[in-house]
Image 1: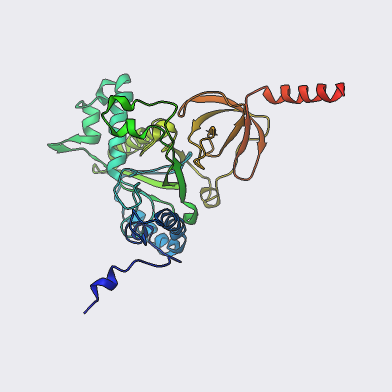
Image 2: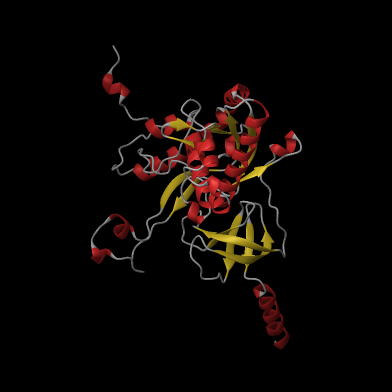
Length: 351
């Protein structure tokens, strides 16, 4: 007979794991209110981020088999994260924040239901403004999405992350709420002020590429046309609206990529911009949770800025690249670097 107490015995040391979901849900080695909870939580996060690397080989086999079983006619594409992605942030678990992972393989996945919901909202609110047939309960909308009494003809399949570079897909991230009492309470005396203490909350986010497939239950050329149209709709929604949590601060954007060869398809993300370029960037939360002003470029890399513009998280501005580093950029307000160098030269000349 199995010793019940032994089954509940906390794990003393996590050195290796292959299933990120199982680690997250079952392997916190101390109670949440224990004194060493913070260190245990940090250790568990690090182990979870390393887990996909050990399961890459078996997942690759499953990934190829899954794609080979999808019905046609269909439309498909490779979609890369523009920055970071977080799906299922509100899921309950012992780590306070959630992430949707494949039940069997423990790797990130985008549920087909989420893709369908995003597409439906985008179809009605954006395409419906141009062509009324795409509005809710109208002809084209019903053909794609259906309604409660009659399902649509398009199937939005779960998006599986590509197995290449799987070991780098999970990243430790942080958000820093400043007005916790205001967000969770109904007491009017708890209005947000500049005197509230920030409360950094760590969570897991995703980078990588997802293989997205939509198929149509109508055979032949007609079904293929509807599948292509639906993928175009979804690709626009993913680019402009994003999917998952924290989309208002730049998370969840995916860009359709059409690689010319396998090497290009599986290449690591690279810094695309050079020193001297002026870019459109978006302010996002400091990834290290220190409250500094941080901006993200369109290639998914970001950086800090000297004398930053005073804009809120989620707002866009234009910044100049004044330095390119291994992990990101060094930004400056356009023209400010030249002014700084001029003042420095004048000061040196007066000595």
